Length: 335
Image (tube, one colour):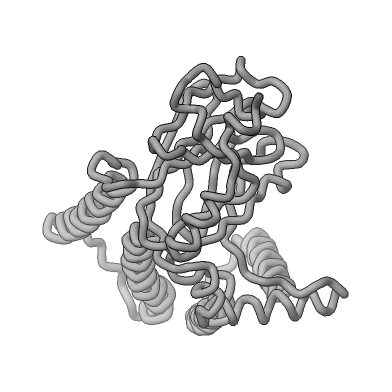
């Protein structure tokens, strides 16, 4: 598919240069009705090919799209994407038709005379007010969704997790039974205290540092982010969540997982993607891939940026509580 795209671009560029050359060589030649008919028909051929490629890409490349959101809050982001996608798609489809049909319909003929239409206040109001109205609706919906993810003041019994970014890995810390994280600062980093937790803070004693993120299905999770060195971006694509990790400050967002990992693996879209991925991996002689939620870094933070991945496991709350209870506290690990 990518090769076909490159071929199409090369042909388009070649035709453009050919047309420019013809124009430069034929500046003194007046176009005839036959020339105008030919050019008008070429416009129709182009729009037919353009629509065929567009429809093909929509169908064939749908496999690269993310599956259904795995968080409740992410549903609204998917809705916003779908609304924007359809509005742009419908407008683009109609406008492209007119852009290429009108040169054919109004192609030059000897008996035709040009009509000079100065302006229309009515038309200008329509094409100004209508897009403005649509934009206001989309922006308002987007702001509401932003507050939905960022305003965590009304969260009931949330799970508090700190994600600490550094070149080129993640460290993760869960709040203990007091549901409060102990203070953290880069100046406290020493030995196995890789997150710089202030162990003199009473809230830090029952915190738990882990190497894999586990989340309970159906419970609000508040993530707090710090960075040790450069700007990182914690990205959890399947939950439609992303936040910059900024050195010297704490950022945060929250979401509620709605599917366990096992449930997501049974999703039809995920199964279809896995088939495509494993077909490629089999051809390369690689082991088959199994779906997992991931925490990624979406900032190019250095040479080994691609290594910043951490597995996320979503499970039923009973299973999660059992797993969390098995993890040692910082007071037990850092003596």
